[in-house]
Length: 120
Image 1 (cartoon, rainbow, N blue to C red):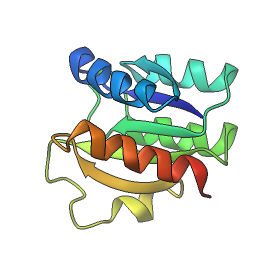
Image 2 (cartoon, rainbow, N blue to C red):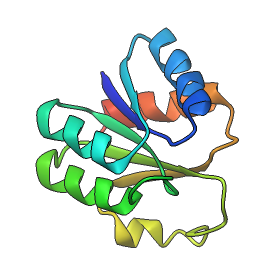
Image 3 (cartoon, helix red, strand yellow):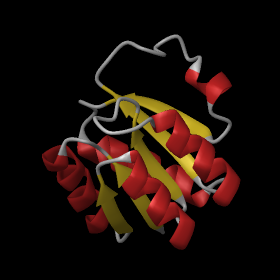
């Protein structure tokens, strides 16, 4: 399974990456909208772990681009804010499958990614 992590905080992205790789997943971690869309334009992914608040760019733009270029890719949104806590993210991003707090234990995030990577 191929996973793209889009997380502005490099240390958090690497933490998640290590947990996912331990589960046998192929993982790349980027920090911005430009890096994410560039990667999605060239490489196939099954799941995108996407921080809702990026320091550079828009997470919704990444999700929209993924919907266009890779319609089968599923997005697991993470955030450290209460924005979209009402579940409305699912109305804004058709490829959204989960919405988690960025403080979710990495092993729980890995379980969610594994689940959505195996299901449609």
